[in-house]
Image (cartoon, rainbow, N blue to C red; front, side, top):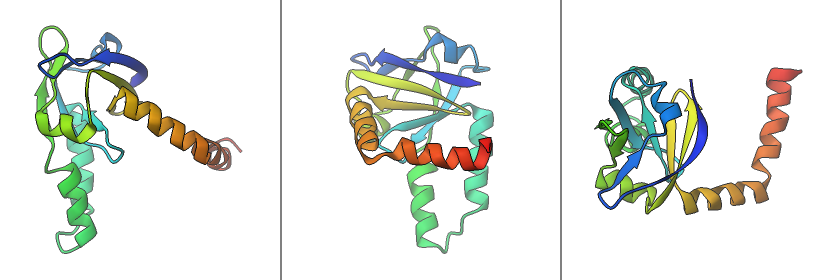
Length: 148
């Protein structure tokens, strides 16, 4: 289970250290990276990527403009990344640019995948959502769906 929130640095070569707690949950030395919907990156183990990408492709039609845009955003830019012997991944330039990654990043374990955010963009995103009350609205939905 991939969980946790970690601050990490991105080196001059564009490498990011996958925190040890997360690496311990990853079998093998490969992750699949793609664009997330919020100016961030999503990383999957090969097994989870196969499930996730398979669901997307089996539920989308090449005749739907919205579906084509979805797979162009998520499937097409995906890349296989090797975890080196030091636990780092090299973020491809196109994905690094998309997520606005600079020197400091936030790595989030979200059970089945990992999110990578530029630290400043993540803080801004969280503040905007806090001001809009997004979490409070989600709490109400969780209460209705899960707990009561």
